[in-house]
Length: 187
Image (cartoon, rainbow, N blue to C red):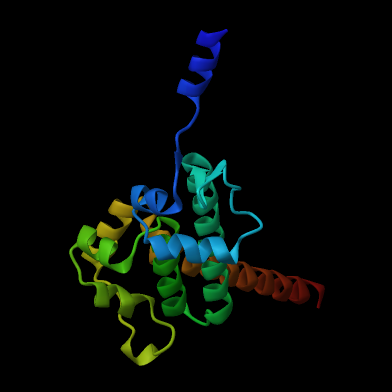
């Protein structure tokens, strides 16, 4: 019986203070506390309260924080989509670069280091606020971006959209030509 209790205690997840968990996760202590205060209904309950200190299961807190960050990322992406009207191919390219980067949970700085460009270069590729400052990557940079992110090059360059529109246009033209030919034979 005593061995069973010892095994149960040994197999139990160790409990930590929120500050310790934040340090282990690599996020700021105030950041974790801030998110916990916003989402207090879903934040894991303390497993132990002693001497006014609350101890939590690290795995539960990490799971909660990860799901919260994913929800936040999806909200940002949806807001960005809503805020960025895609009126042309350049808009679509800017959005797809942004979408690719955020789906991979990369900062502009991290992605820039990976492909050998500056953080501000990526900001200029993704911008919707000031279209005058928007630029596009060179072809070799597009290729590198596609290789590193694992995203299809045609998708990043919005070639799939251009090809799709071209196919639709060709189908319309073919239908019109067929209708005109049919009218001529009926006349």
